Image 1: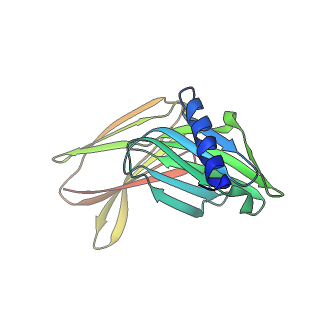
Image 2: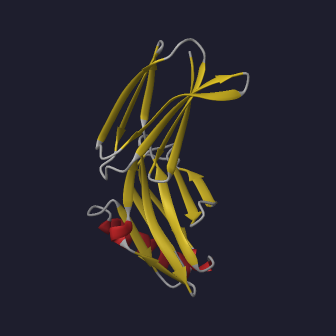
Length: 191
């Protein structure tokens, strides 16, 4: 085993020892950043995005439990970036910036967004969403016929921690858009 391989094994062993105390562990050395995430499931999506939302890296997590991977983030151009871990009903973000080949993380800027949960039972559609920050959320329901979407319902909800809505939809195709915190979620319903 090479010196570099031994160093990487030692680094991962050291970092994994800390993973019990925190959900996300970032460990840096001169060349790479090790990312360790707890409680991941197979199928979760990990992305790195720039400040314009452009995806620079995307990976589907393949195992349940703990995810470990090293990244050379110092090679990125100066700017602001974010790791996003998309789970079933939440998105965890870990923002970082690169300045002169140096990577900076700020634990207090990490956040979790909860995605809306939509369930269809016959012609009823139930929407539930948790928003701990109580940001304005806009819900738009469109009827889709022959490729054209026509707005049927629109509402902006402010200062609500829990949003619960039920819609009775006639037979047809629908598109539901939910906009919250500069994030858009779209679901298509066929009943």
